Image (cartoon, rainbow, N blue to C red; front, side, top):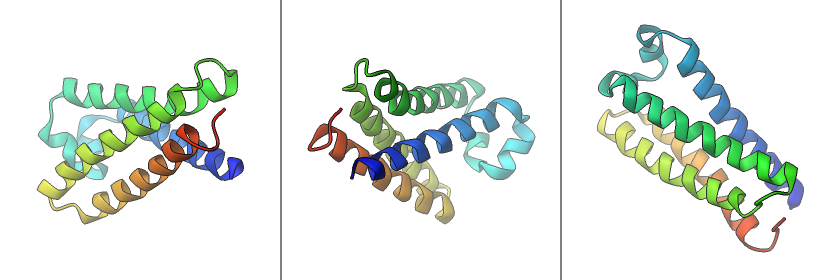
Length: 123
């Protein structure tokens, strides 16, 4: 089970780091093609969401690897759940079915990590 939890942590962290990197390296016009929600938010709001996603990705991996403040791992997973609930609301408002499915998958993975790292498979 520990291997499955690690796999979920790495998958979530990689997905969020990739998304943040994409948002930082692509111009807004190109980004709107793959992430239409960006068009409805200011640059500051997009940067804030990106910063939260970056911190959550780091929080899933760094404490576990360094064995420092390992209680942050399940808290980062809960943070991802909250971020994805907000993202799901935006996707529902914009009728982006593909985005909603992705949000549900991320919520399920993050809930699995939170359950495992808060509960029987702590560090």
